Length: 117
Figure 1 (cartoon, helix red, strand yellow):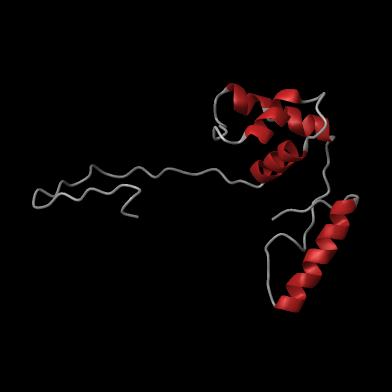
Figure 2: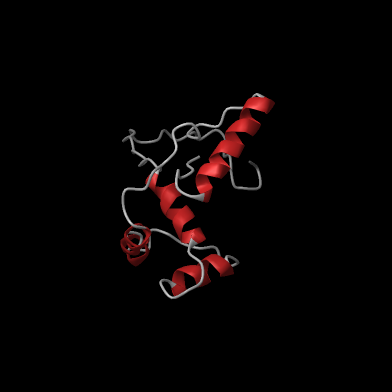
């Protein structure tokens, strides 16, 4: 979890740290704090290539985030966009490992889908 150290966010970070201490919890990233080094407009515009390459998708029901992205920079809000940028900034790439050919088990067939998980 990342919380900026600017404006209201610093007060939020302080409150979350107090709750963590009183409840004996630890949330990674809270202690560090994040001070953005670029303007918000630059950060948000850096998301454009990902959308252009179809690497980011909204669920059909996510109407408000879609409206926020479509109305930028003239819209009233940009909080969802900022949250998406923050989450993606902390994301790590997934590395694929090449595996050998799968061995087929001819004795039994197991069908696994989302219903069996």
